Structure formats: C-alpha cells, structure tokens
Image (cartoon, rainbow over all chains, first blue to last red; front, side, top):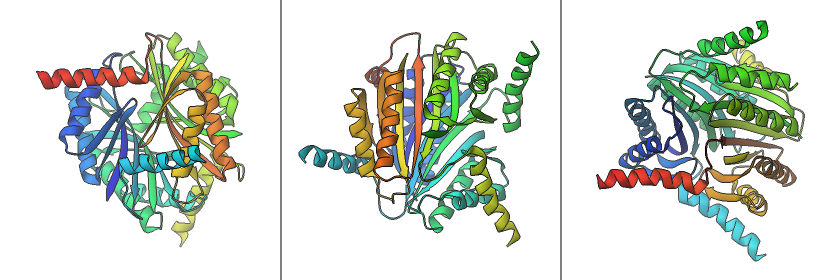
Length: 104
Length: 104
Length: 104
Length: 104
C-alpha cells in the first residue's frame, strides 16, 4: 500500500529557532530514498507505507538525539486504492482545472 | 519509543455519513490492545511506536475493504524521551492548572 | 455557518512543560461561551464560525502575552450544511454503531 | 498579527475526485490577495490574521455552493511575535542548513 504524506515535525524544548532541526529531518527523508519535497510548512513524501513509517521513526529518533526532549508531528497521511497517485500528479490535476478556468 | 497520537481517519468517496467507518476504526483500535479514547474529532491512542503504526495500517486496510477508494488521515503524533507521558497524565496536568486558577 | 473544530495549540520557545499554556487556552475557550471539551491532544469546540475564529485569535494573543514567541496550532475545522451537527451527536453516532456491532 | 498557515481543505460527499474543488479553493486564495503557494497536500498562505480567516471562510462557502454537504479542513496555523516570518524565509532557512551540511 502506497502512502502520500505531508509531515510537519516540530521539536519542543529546544528554543524558538527550528530550521536546523527541520534540515535534519529533510536529510533523513532524502537519504531514505523516498520522493520528498520540502515546502514552507512541512515536507511532502510518497512511498510504500512501511518505508514512510520507518523514515518518520528515524526522524523522531534523530531529533531526540539532537537534544529535543519532545517531538510533536502533524501528519496528513493518505492512501488510495482505486488508482495510482503521485505528488506531481496531484498538483498537475489542480493546475489543469486552474488553466481551464483561465481560458474560459 | 512510546507514542501519544491523535488519529482522525476519514474515508473519501463513500458519501457524507461517516460514523459507520469511524466505528470500524474504533473497533480496530480497541482490538489492537492500545489504550484508545474516542472524542468528537478523532481518537487518542498511546502505545509503542510499532504497535500504533501497525494499528493505523490496519485501519486504512479495513476502510478500503469496506469500499472506501481513498482514506485521508490527519495525525498528531508525539514522542517524549525526558519522562513518561500518558493520555490521562496530559489531561490531569492541565486540570491541575485550571483548578489552581479557580481557587486563587 | 457553524463550525466543529479541534484545536491543538502549542507554544514554542517556552520549554518543554506546556500544561500551564494549555490551561490558559482552555480558560479562554470556556470564557468565550463556546461549547468546549478538553481531550488529551487538543480541545473540541463548536460554535458560530466568527465566534470560534475570535476565540482562536484570543488564544494566540494570550499565549504570546504569557511569553511565547511562537504559537503553532493544528486545527481540524469542519462545516456541514446538509444538517445540524454537534460534538455530542458525532460521538453518539459512532457509539450507536459500536453497540449494534457488539449485539450482533 | 500575521499568520503563516497551511490549508488542506477537503470536501466530503462529492465523490473521490477532488481536484476541481482544490482548484476552486486555490482560486479563492489567489483572488484574496494573500501570498499563496499550492503544494501536493495543501496550500501555504501568509497574511494578516483577519484576512486569512476571511479567505478560509470564503473557501468553505464556495465549496458548499459547489455542492459539498461537508467541508473538512486541516490547518497548520502559526504566529510569531519575536520577528517577522515569511513562507520564503522559512524554506531559505532550512536550505541554508542543508547546504552547509553538504559542504562540510
């Protein structure tokens, strides 16, 4: 089962500047071999369920090792069985509608 | 690593009445042996990381088997390594402050 | 337009013990006159759209006044126009299915 | 008070193909004058609190008018008072760390 996920991983108890921690998370996700795209409020990921779960676990472990006593993650996590779905395909489908609307 | 999670699991493409699906999810979570508490917008769960991940996967599988082509989940997912944390403990800590405030 | 919402409001940059801040949020929500129910990972609220928005804004303002440089909130926010919906009604609908399942 | 938000707005009860609805939301956000960036699992927005709230309300109204009986939104919603923050600035801060890491 494939997952399309959006991960917003926030370390607590390490002050107010979090970009160093977000970068560490980003590095874990890229090294995991998953298709991962950083955005301003999280990272979009697609991959097999178990692979995405394993990468998420590794992110929490890495942030704890970096000194964060708590890690609080907000996830959007979706599966689809009627047809294949990709990060790029989701954006393309929306943009098709927007273009159609502009040209009408 | 223990996880405190809040799962809001929504089947898409099955109409507007979702309580039957939420009940199926609830049943999976209870049968999983995890401490699970239903609330109006999700279910709070605590347990070992791998156990919570496995229960979440089973929820998606069950909803797909019930006919949902898409399942979209919103998760709050947190770990803490400085001390143990429980669902009941989190509520109790807040209520302690509220009572203190009332009596002052 | 009525809203059913689930608010998880997290102050950043104030250390690792957050219950004092969650209690302050809870107090704001109760004083707002909204139907509000605390759970282990957030607070469920129901009310008119503008009232819930105003209460959320007040929560952020109060946490900033308490010293939090950043406040990061995760919201589930839903509206329904086909029929009225309440926090209690949502739980009751799920529990009806669970009971039916047990007795079959 | 400025808000950085990430909106994932999902209509329920309109079947399984949602891109037309996501495009309608996108159009509302762009016409609102807010800085808005679509990604695969939502849209990042920055603006004044009341402006972002008003745009969100308009999105729900538009989706209901398009026929969705329910609209379920997941929001990440953050404010910061110690310094100004932008969508671009958040990504740039993370990428600076990633580049530093690569060159070390």
